[in-house]
Length: 538
Image 1 (cartoon, rainbow, N blue to C red):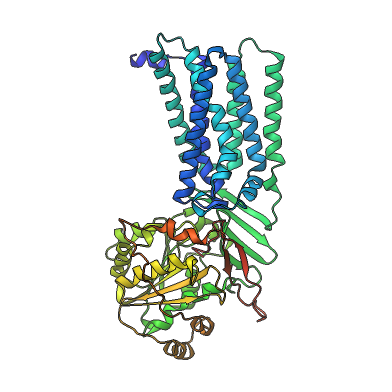
Image 2 (cartoon, rainbow, N blue to C red):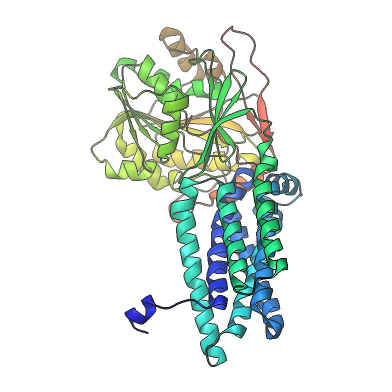
């Protein structure tokens, strides 16, 4: 077929059905990652579950559709598309309920998301699998090979378009519910078109009813009833779901439903999360605070740490935040103001360090880890060597690690400690909660030999004029962990997902600090460890 013929080519009704089913099936699969991530994270296991379920459902649909293809008609395909659109309405309305219920099923971390993925995305993908064998049966092409090859080529082109549009256009611009609604109406319109010009009352009625169900599912979505507080802003960024929520006097930034930053609206300078005070530890460990000139934060979030360093210390602050919309939200809702001493970069942290060989920092704060979504390339020996190279000779790295302090839930902490200790002369760690639960553990590594004792750090804290009292943090000084059996993480082998497995199902504690009146600390905020609760990029 030449270019002119291709340009004038019109899809037959069966080809149209295959083309649209390809768009919808692949679009739904891409969208599944965003739907599942707030509850189960976006680890390799989550994406493996999505791909496995969708392929299995399609295969089953192909098989069943092939068995029934001899009786296939355009009208029958239209009813399949209507049925798929109905299930999308169910998905819009009840996905949060599905996720909450299935998260209670006692499965290992690797398989935790399988029930939710199967319940939410198996049925619509299965139904769409019927379309290709039906279309092949109805094709005007001569021969089984030519008909099937043509149909699957058209379907694959639709899949390419669906994945491209969903990834690069729809998700960055629209909410998950709006995208699901778009797919639902696309299926309804296609189902209606398949019956033209002989439109029956049943078809018209089905199109109206399914359209009303789609609109009704959006209006009455279970997710509309939010118990977390007042959602004052939400969007789908290129990277994640971003929400700003006010609950009383506390404003929280949530990324994929994980708490990342918090601000007291009545007293913006207060540290809502206790562990954010620990970011000041490098200023105790450096020999001379006045010689600290350049600080880098990898992970911005609500910019709690960067703002404090800019305001309290006479330093230049660079912030690398991979999601530019997070920085925009920090400016709009968390009082971030970029002055002469602060510069933000929308880039991956490791890429930034690799592309800036002339940059040299006195302190680097690594605050880009999430609880179940740790970017492995920011954990390895090669990355630690890069960090060490970008630090001054007496520079200091502080990494905010979310892990258990001991036991099986501490596997990631011990591996990260051992990895850092391979590169840096001295490595220290500080727990942020007295409990044995999963918590924020601050890992501090120095580019020169320091040999600090707990008493040394307490004395320096007493002598220096710091914006916060670090005595509680120094009291949480931890002994060197037993790293026998812990792996050294490398670019070639960093089994981060496996190391995080034991944390699933365990409680995660974020200690909250004293309020502005100096009262006792609030009760520790805790959540199930299964949601990807994180505190990176504060």
